[in-house]
Amino acid sequence: MAKETGRKLVAQNRRARHDYTILDTIEAGIVLQGTEVKSLRAGRASLVDAFAQISEGEAWLHGMHIPEYTEGTWTNHTPRRRRKLLLHRDEIAKLVGKTQEGGLTLVPLSLYFKDGRAKVEVALARGRKTYDKRHALAERDASREVSRALGRRAKGRDD
Image (cartoon, rainbow, N blue to C red):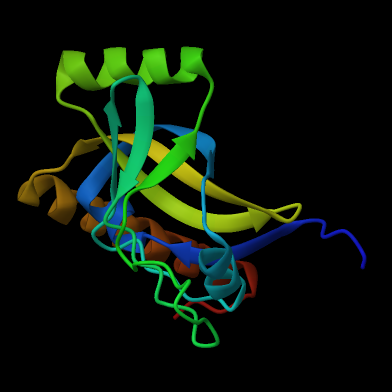
């Protein structure tokens, strides 16, 4: 069997980029059971209510939903169990310091396979207030409108 290469996206947490200001991202491995991997390879997972937490010197991912594998038997996994994240000790120490000092949180942004291994992109993030969300949406819409106008002008059409 040929070895997998490249990156295959399984799930993305789009809501996190809206609700949080992303300060830093870290790629972490994740400890999974066999049926979880099979379910992920089928493209089934949800990061909607997921968050990461560091307890007793280890990083854990809570609330990620991986549905049971349809072909599984009594060895199937529980869909919302907590899963261990694989990080170096110095990375965990850095995250502990930053989350304790300034009200930052750890939010998973995406779940993917990289060279055949399951990885999670975890972000160090600060929650946004409602007016910050509105401001970010207005900025994005304004920049989109500017780029559209520049595109029309480049094509010679002044609408």
